[in-house]
Image 1 (cartoon, rainbow over the protein chains, first blue to last red):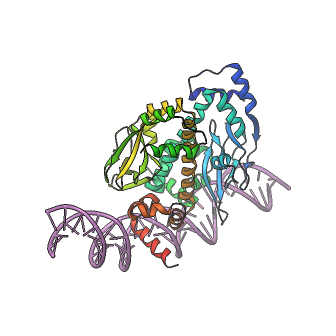
Image 2: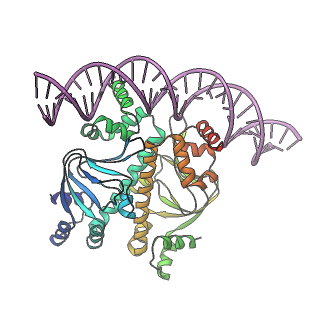
Image 3: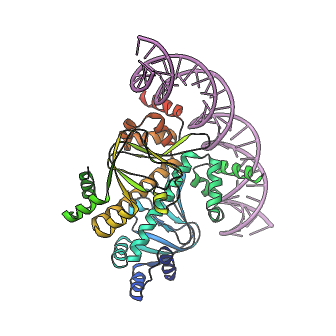
Length: 194
Length: 194
DNA sequence: AAAGAGGCTTGACAAATGTCAAGTGACAAA
DNA sequence: TTTGTCACTTGACATTTGTCAAGCCTCTTT
């Protein structure tokens, strides 16, 4: 399973990884299987690991006073998932993270992440680029949320990340877009008649 | 003016900065005065600099088909501003950045940023922490946009960043929150009667 | 096979928000 | 001073989106 990480790093950098470095990487990541509906993180706990998804589908969400779930992040193969705020600040998380499909992940603690950053230059760069991409992606999502209608946001998602629409049930997609399941159902109906 | 940067870095790290390092920093940053309404970046151009705001108030926004402005970022003292996507990817920006008040900024190109990262460890950490904080802040804003009503988003902003409400005109705040100026006016009226 | 749960759709209605138009007041330019 | 511009407010109305309730379908469990 660790092979997935090797490929992943290589996709972010051109630097080769030596065998010793590879050994360090193997020691840093802890593989774990997470079954559908199983939690990786529960609200109130401190996020001790970031998870690299080797295979599967997961989500990060909060639950409001009325018990309604608000999904703020989807994760599938080759994506990271976890609450960065809690992970870095060591504060109790306001979010839950759980598996939507049975998933294989690689867990990384904050200490191991520091270790990798210090010892493996390629990793430093990988993390830094990752942070930048996350920020850019967030910026796009903010832009969509203040500039576009619900219908346009759905079209945008369908264009950029069609795979998410197939992997996650419609009510979760609605939550991710910030609209009710009924509204999404109606938007899709309209979109079909074209 | 460069003294502002020294203080800024020290607020992010405990490492002292030597005189040689300080010299490198002085060479990297180019001071510039930007008058109210003056552009730092225009849509279609590549964002060549990130700007550290020493004094003043600026905004990053897009303009849609109908000519309506959508503000995705405010910047005041000690904040960075610029289009990160364009800056990193070297692609034409979809945004404008201009000054809302007369402002003093320090410009940093991509090359100089690399130089600082390579030569000054404290800077590497500063940028990395900055990226992380940006990501966390974005995440909070996404959460607000899908979970809260317009009224709650305003209350949230008023609580977290009251200074922005005083520095930026109300129609810009409305745009930032993703609502019409009329709606914000009504929300404020309601909020007063409590 | 029967029962139940969950996800999706649909209709009727309510609530939130946007749009348009008019009016006011402050401030800057002439 | 006068004029004009611009931000803000307010009212009337339109549009979008949410809420609630019912029904259908599929899948799982018993």
